[in-house]
Length: 205
Image 1: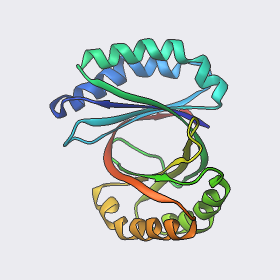
Image 2 (image 1 turned 135 degrees about the vertical axis):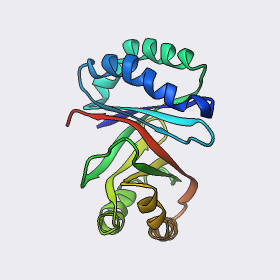
Image 3 (image 1 turned 180 degrees about the vertical axis):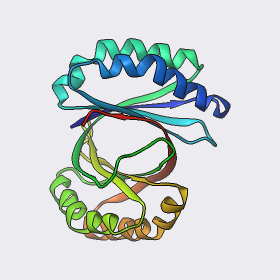
């Protein structure tokens, strides 16, 4: 699976308006594209920073959709006077899903930088250390380990949680994993940790 991640910033007061524009205008266009497997939007209501993420069955499908997506992206951003900060293409290295993600659930994104060639070691760590601990944590829904396509050393571990309480309760576990991975993989470092609310989610599979 591949992802197109649109990082945008909107006025915090217009986060719900962004959700409506995505639901009514962008979602039908995106989901109609061949190979599309879903669309979600995670928003930080305090800052207005939002990640609009489309999911694709292959890199080829993602690339083929770019013309249609670029048009609706521009319309969506303009409709709420948002700022498009970046568009990142990422590959999903591993995904674990215990329960569906729903509107109102919470997400944590841990951005990790590691030396080139660290992918196999990071995947092994995720499978043997992270996944068992995530699955044992109350309120865990979905997890993904992703890698930026254009930057071999840039990764992110994304987890979805049932509610704000579950997200908060998982912080100790997440902190422990972050400390462990930087000790396990030489040269790895945590770049940033962010949390947000899922305001839109649609999956085909």
